[in-house]
Length: 541
Image (cartoon, rainbow, N blue to C red; front, side, top):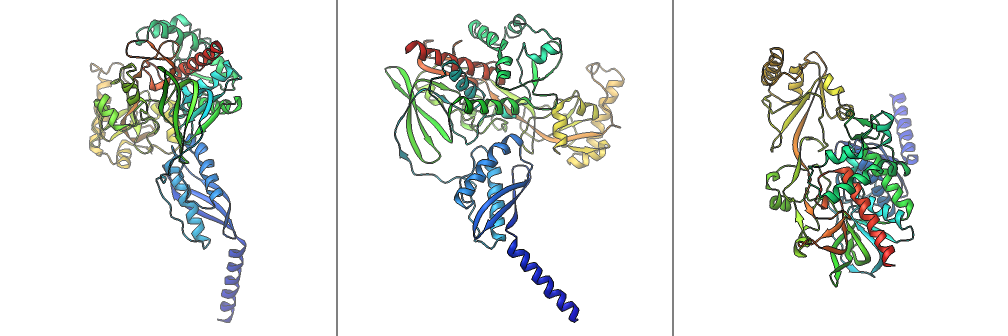
């Protein structure tokens, strides 16, 4: 008994000593995808350091948002700070984890909020610049960079309402509609401008815009490479314009990181957490924009030229209901900033709007995190009864493929490696893991394979589903991926009035405009807007 008592005392003493010396506490919180774990160094009630030691958040969000939220907490010596807009769940997880660590350290438990507190508004001094770009996505960054490249002495301000840049572009797998790239040439692919013009002849662009699109795209890869942005993964064959960064790396994460880096390096004045508001108009010319930031400050940015690159309206249910009712109720895979901020102003100012009901519905996004998924050479898309179901409508579906399908497309490989897909060795096991009716899924697979084997009409070009392979499946939904209508612009990216005349001093690019393409076209006409706005400065000066 005495030995046990001594041991107990020794153990208690050792434990106390460790507690006194140990100033690092591990806290946990729940993020967008899973648990987030942080090591927090606390000395004499002061948070000295925060290290995120475990997280499964979306990479392009985490690498931008985590440094911001950590810095805010350190500066305030408290997790009672504003979340990073555009990364609210990740921010909340970090704040909750730090709070957990503080409680372990014997400190008072902080009050953690999900939403940011409203700030009392105060008007501050106006700012003068040469060019102001509203929106920090692919087109906005491209516009700002090109404006500085065209006129190095010009003052260029870029405002972005979220705390992180790059919009939806940072999530994109494919930088498509790119030709004359080094990757194509290295593969012996000679995709010419004439081929591009023919390919896009029926896309809906004016002949003038189509020509500028083709001309600018011809040198786009070289422009990116001059900034250290390499798209080395061309895929899809001799007539394909699809590009990855590498064969095993999404294009968007590399392109957008490179654009952000170069925008800062070239001297663009980037102001995140700053929302563009009403345009300032004098004598029928746009001469600036009213802005407000997340510190409660509002002011005017007066500029010779204004470029709007604020994206579409996929994230605005009211505008979706008004202009694209066919998409009402669908989730969106677009960025949180895609709220159509300037559409109402365009209407009031009688600027030309077009194709407002034109959208892109993506057939399958992961229900877990809204990432675009799929792309296998063959897959079943079924409902919970295991029956094949059309996409494009509201409801829970399931995406199912075999090993060959998994290996046929990099997106599938990436998502399975990240744990987004259930993996099984039989159809029955996969159905059980997904919560699908087992008999129904087995019947669907058997019917398909019988039809392929027997050459049933409609199945001639389909392959067998290999039930002996490793099988993959995930819950998915159809989603509104992007809106493709907006304000009309000409070949110089100048905004047009309803009567077809140009709005002096105003340019626009990207999803805020009518455009037939997507990611790369946003970059192209962002470049055009930046160049033309800068050249106008030179001509006026």
